[in-house]
Amino acid sequence: MSTQPLRIALIGAGIMSATIGIMLRKLMPEATIHIYERLDRVAAESSDAWHNSGTGHSAFCELNYTPVQNGKIQVAKALEIAHQFEISKQLWAYLVEHDCLSYDVPFINTMPHMSFVTGKDNVAFLKARYQTLKTAAIFEDMQYSSKSRQIVEWIPLMMEGRASDVPLAATRMDAGTDVNFGRIARNMIEHLETTDHVEVHLGHSVTDITRQKDGRWTLTLEKRADDTDREIWVDRLFIGAGGGSLPLLNQTGIKESQGYGGFPISGQFLQCTNEDVARRHTAKVYGKAAVGSPPMSVPHLDTRIIDEHRTLFFGPYAGLSTKFLKNGSYFDLPLSIEMHNVWPMLSAGMRNVELTKYLIKQVTLSDEDRFTELLAYYPQAQRNDWTLTTAGQRVQIIKKDAQNDGILVFGTEIVASADRSVAALLGASPGASTSASIAIDVIGRLFPDEIKSESWQRRLRTMIPTFGTSLIDDGALCLETRKRTATVLGL
Image (cartoon, rainbow, N blue to C red; front, top):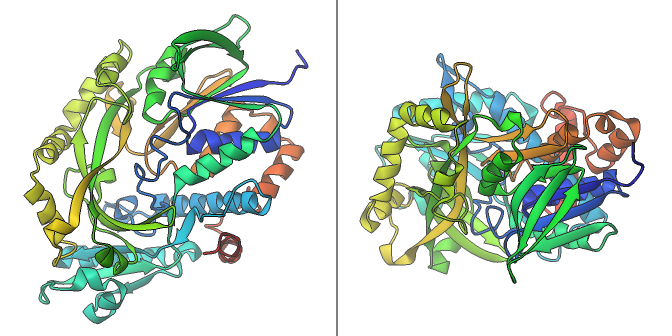
């Protein structure tokens, strides 16, 4: 076996490649890392603050993470996501402490996370959810109220002009945050560029991926500035190009990619242009998704702090698009259809007729329709205070089930080759918020033996002190860790 340092390529310069790159830099300081990004700016697609909801998904307020099955609230997914977000915060705190992540402008800010519902049945659901989650230390600070007086104190803007005879309830987690994932990714990659053996190539599109006889990978690159092509080879490859990951994964030809397809969904928000109104709402407030809508379409009135600029969003409004990236092509979807995924995509479509109807309805919404939906959350909203803005593009996973039919998967999924030479990340939310956990998983897929070694385990525990320990099971450690990271991150 060659003793030359490994050559690693990361496709896409968003939060995932940045996180994997900076962790590999600590684990494998001698490896050569190349990051390729088709755009001329780091984190300009799904990770960008204006394209990403920035919730810091921790399952504090997202009701779709606690579905009801057989009459019981299922909280396993919420617990796991909350745990994974604490892992992300540990990594960011470590990087801040070691001057690997700039904090001149905060990339994470305290922002209470709330759930808000109306109607008798929804109130009963929220109370049951609260009672179930509060038994776990990771959620023990959650507050619940069905009293208007208390909710007015929490979210006065949403309560003004609201009918007093409608049952309502809310939960609140003061440990919630607003996160600028674009700033985190840019800061990480700026640091990586100052280290040895790391090169960042902006304006470079990967046009072809082929496997060599020795198991390495050849990437054909097009430099967009002058349309010149060149080839490079690498030992390990990570594809983290957001919606662009699926076509690149198909190019690898690995058998593990067979049957995967993608369903693109675009998003829009109403943005408040009245700064006086925006200053009066200090929370991220999530409601319940409409029947038949995708989980990513849960309505929320969302305070954002982007590079010290405070604003207020409401949405999202879903839309149909054949693009896989906001800066993509309308041919992305048709060109992604191949023999191996035709049936999974067709059968998934037949299984999700209601979703298709919902998306068509969303596309045909008028400005008045959108504003009417806002009024359910902010009854005294003034139409001239809000403008429509387009967010990022997401591609939901379609994959085969046990019967070889297609199912639509909401979330993220890692697809890795059997020889551990290539891995790709598909899907959407809550990817950015759980980026550290996903990075560890990806690294474990590409380096299964090394990640078990004592040296790697020790280095991982340096970056993430609770690595290998469940903060769900160890309540005292969870609270201690949350307090420490809050201090370092200024929360």
